Image 1: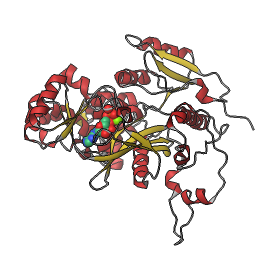
Image 2: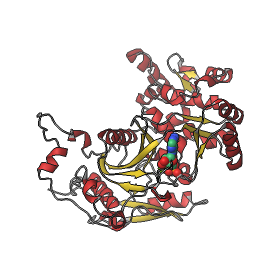
Image 3: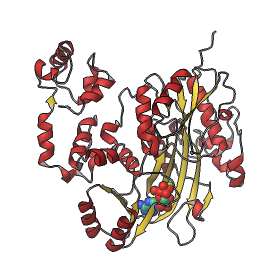
Image 4: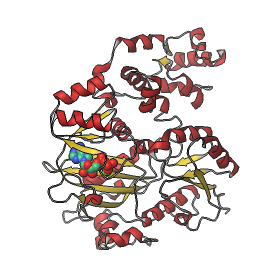
Length: 472
Ligand SMILES: Nc1ncnc2c1ncn2[C@@H]1O[C@H](COP(=O)(O)OP(=O)(O)O)[C@@H](O)[C@H]1O
Ligand SMILES: [Mg+2]
């Protein structure tokens, strides 16, 4: 039997950014692994050319917040290159605001959050809301040990803070008294490491870099479930969630999630093994990473774990311990923990032919500042772009709709009622316009604008070009 030809892997590096992977994380990969470095500034075209020259099929790496939009453009210019994780998966890496939008869309528990772009509205909000509350810098680097996270006790304090720090837009959350939070790391949606981060006595920040402690015991199943749900929603090859546990009622919610988290060296090896399995067509085995392995590894000092490499597990053989976690029965003969939920799964490379988070819509920061768009206009874009229902997106922004939006929406072409000539105004030819009309005759109305992609001739690029000009 001939082996599947291995794809060419490339690692994305960026000048001045800490490297997450290196070639040693892909031990055994027989083909040369390329490295492509992005030098910032006006380096986009050169970078694209280098990827093409090196004939890379799969580009692996985390994109930091400040390069995110540029890399969306780069990935569009390289349609045959698979980014791992995809740019859609990395949407949350860009900002806390993006984490919030992601969580709202997929119905993941988060603290009540308000994001307000309009300065006057932000002031009004802070004047009338409850305290204490949390204010965070919305954009820029995430996971900075709470450096851009503030607890404020009054409207005055809040207003002074945003003025002094120039935090814009306002990103604010209810303050939740937290007993601890748990960082969960996942590979192929399987939790592979989880640890508690506990604040120092009397403090509210749980970040261990600020003097808190960490431990590995008894991570609740609900926390793993929420992390798995987030990882699946993001279609993430690897993922990390910080999940907080409220002191009052042990309710849980996501504080942060993204692909770009610090991870122990051995976890990067596991990610490497997973990626090699995913892309080798069977040549590499799926890594066997037992659930709750962290309880055992946690018996080592964390300073040792931080530098330890090459932890691999053998084949699964049941033991009483293992049984408990892998579908064994308890005394009442009921399954203990449903291991099926925690299987390591392949992520779907082709599941999203369409961009899920196109920057034309979701790059709020630049759209607001550069094009001086108003908030209602942008919300309108979200409404039309979200396939099913965008309700969860706009929870705190609903009352914003104004006449301006309606005016704009009048100019849009309704793909369910437009005549052939009206459709042609979108820049499509007679043939494609005909196909749209035939589709309506055969199938009834388009249920979302996304369904237009079913029409031959409406490719990804064309759809992106016209998506803001159409409605249903
Ligand atoms: N809404 C909140 N209520 C209470 N504490 C919070 C809240 N949001 C964040 N924190 C605390 O602040 C820490 C840092 O917040 P986070 O959003 O994770 O920012 P960073 O990017 O700096 O890690 C959290 O680990 C948690 O301890
Ligand atoms: Mg954090």
